[in-house]
Image: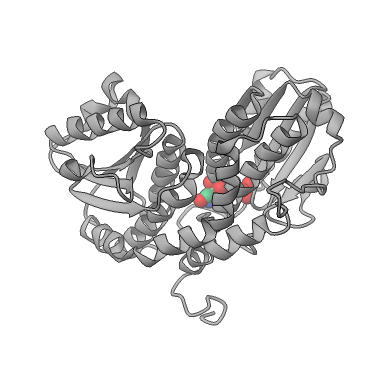
Length: 372
Ligand code: AGP
């Protein structure tokens, strides 16, 4: 009913708007005043976390994209090798698992059969399984060794939005916690990340306040057949997520690519007026990466692409090559997905509406996939 949707036309719009709160709730009580992680709820003994020699993340769909981003944070902050695998592929390739493997199963619903079967397989091989889940008491946390709940609140729309952002937050917290338990030195970078996490809800709110041009752009592209998404580093999974949202909501052909792969094939797809969304990493810190993506934007634009550029405030280098420029607040490199995903959600939702699609219940899809 309209009341359940809190005055919004769709649950998805309500859930997009709830993201600042969802993110703040997921952080609540988990970082103390001194910037230390307080995740006692993760009931896996410190000895197990210290001795783990590999992390394996299993998930499906949007949760898998959260896992792809988590890998960058886990490896960078903890130096433990981390693999990310689609849950549906995992057990069929006889993966190498043992008592020193920490498996993280990410699931909004906690009922996804592919993820459940993968975690059962992992436990049979002796691995410890930690669930990142949004649904209290659901099957995946019940069958795991421990759980870190995301506090997004109920997500009703089939397309995942606030659950994704809170999965990212939970994974960042876990990565920092693993680092803390294993004695990673708390340098300036980690202090900056912890400080930024405390503010990130406000940054998401700021992004939400500037979405009108994104909606107008989406409406103007409603007649298109294809949209491409490019990103690098943590922006690459964000590109995949932007494409998935467009497929499920707008029923458009959408693909996400690592921008560095363009020249290895995908650039052949670029033709006159093809919309290409580019997620640009921060010009600070990893400036080499930034320069490379700026040349990618130039290359596709020279071939006629209509460039839709998502870039940090203050990033002036992209301005000459952006047909449409979407600004996001500057954040530490690894946290950028928390803000860069938001315009992509709004874009897909508005395109679906403009194309007359059912936003909350896209055709052929179920909110939780309880068959393998
Ligand atoms: C997201 O928009 C999708 N509807 C879908 O990919 C979803 O993320 C996937 O099915 C996993 O669901 P889960 O998080 O409940 O396990």
